[in-house]
Amino acid sequence: ATALLRAHALRKSFGRTEALRGASVEVAQGEVVALTGPSGSGKSTLLLCLAGVLRPEAGSVTHDGTRLDDLPEAARTRLRRREFGLVLQFGQLVPELSAVQNVMVPLLMERHGRAAARTAALAWLDRLGAGGLADALPGDLSGGESQRVAMARALVTGPSIVFADEPTGALDRVSGEEVMEVLVSTARSTGAAVLLVTHDNRVAAYADREVVLRDGAVEDPAAVR
Ligand code: ADP
Ligand code: ADP
Image (cartoon, rainbow, N blue to C red; front, top):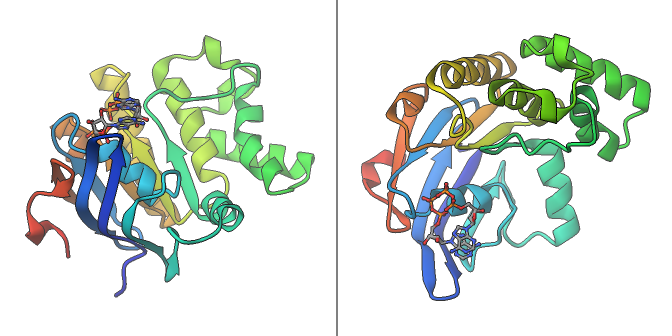
């Protein structure tokens, strides 16, 4: 089977810092992959290149046969909105919007009607065990609750892959485990793949496969299929 998402020989520098030096990784449809490695090894940079947020200087990123790295900005944004969900370490919710309004945002950007967007957003909050939080403001949510809302926002558009950068990094152990269980079980039931950045072995254990980065490249070539 061909990979859903494939990065080949990516290079990305910030000034004189070479964050990625020929990193390659593949994610199959529905697969949960953990990207691990020491701090500064390029995990976040690789995730952001795969997610089409950062543009690599060399190498290719292919999603379902489409080259992301040389798509024009507008087309890349459209593909990102339709196919990708993004969950970061801190929920990154819009503080002025209620939980349900936050989850509606990606649908409104895709020009769904307000009523339909609200119904879908409420259903996703329910599914992630956050139905009772619909009208709460982000400032009143715990870390675990914020991540449930952020996951609902990432999944509401039906993405083929969810990118999660240290999704449990700001949580205590128990809420971190809850968030991982909800993330992985929801991804499995929707068929979405997950690419997870973490430095925590307990979090990586939720993945089907682990890819280790060191100094901007994948450490063990056998880990790339
Ligand atoms: P990791 O996620 O493994 O900790 P990062 O991808 O965040 O690694 O960073 C890899 C290297 O690139 C580090 O040296 C980091 O300081 C640097 N870096 C990452 N993003 C930026 C940026 N926006 N500007 C400058 N340097 C950056
Ligand atoms: P991580 O927890 O993955 O190591 P960091 O704390 O290194 O992430 O970085 C958080 C954010 O800051 C990322 O978006 C990264 O690209 C950016 N960043 C990292 N290092 C630098 C840097 N030296 N200068 C500017 N931005 C950076």
